[in-house]
Image (cartoon, rainbow, N blue to C red):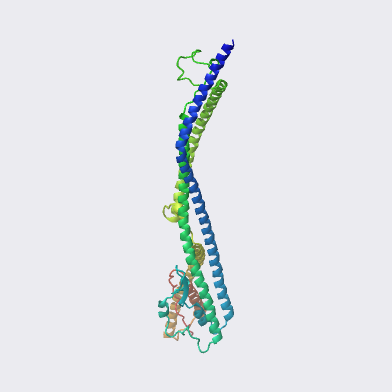
Length: 467
């Protein structure tokens, strides 16, 4: 019995020794593979850390450069305000009623050469003649000036020397500020170039860091894949093995998949859950198909509406622009507020002119109607005048006959007719005056409208003949 126990223990110890030997071999293989990967992994990790450091340095330089640009812009703004302040002090010093106001302003704004000191790369100071961008020396401007203009470099006889010297002092202050502004602008340009260079370096550093991280991740995945290839022996008891296919253990276990017994129930529940999900997805697919058909019908309706609206839009566009235009391009066109304001004024002026033209046409129409009424009245008066003229001719004939035969007695009817003729002649003269007045008024009105023919002239005034 003791021998059997010792034999059983020996078998268990042999089993443990075999398992320990297998584990030792697997660990040795893993150690060997890790040793092979260690050098490459260290290089990739060092490269990754280096790229992180480079990106941090470049980002810090970019931030510093942006801060310097902001400081330079603030300095330029401060100098510009200083320049405006000097000009305001100069205007306040001269006042509005100074005799030499224009001359002193020209002296103040004169562009002259100035020598400024610049530091070379070796640390030595060198003088060079320069001027700010806003006050560059332009000899052509001096040549274009009139010969009779006063010399800006000398004080005129009638101008006070104090005012001239003060103006020159203000000008020197302005030129000093302009030189500082020009220097700051040159510095700003250099800073912008540095910022562009650093931005490119930052972009390259970010790309290099991403590439290094990608290489390190790919290497770690490859290392894990090779470590997973290592096979480990696992001992199982017969009561731990259940074969579900033929209810019996096969002779070859190579195609067998090994997993825990608890996972069988989980797989069964998962199968049922997948069937439920399948039924739900079928129902959702049916609903989605119905919704798709409904959306297709709505799409056709909206396409018809869109086509009608497009036709209406084209008609409106043709009415407004005279041709078809691309609305998207019109939206990208920037509108000048000044041009828009002038266009509004022109439209308002055109509307006012149109209203005045309509009012003038209305007045002309009324004058034309009045003219037609007066023409009819004149025609009636002319007809009556002709009738009176004919009667007058008849009376003259009878008077001529009476003059030839003076002894012939004149009847009372003839005397009555002479009186009536005299009264009618007076009526004709008054009507002729009225015709002349209306003719002048019509001629005045016809000058504002279309050409209107003058009315028929009244017959000349006749003096009555008395016996």
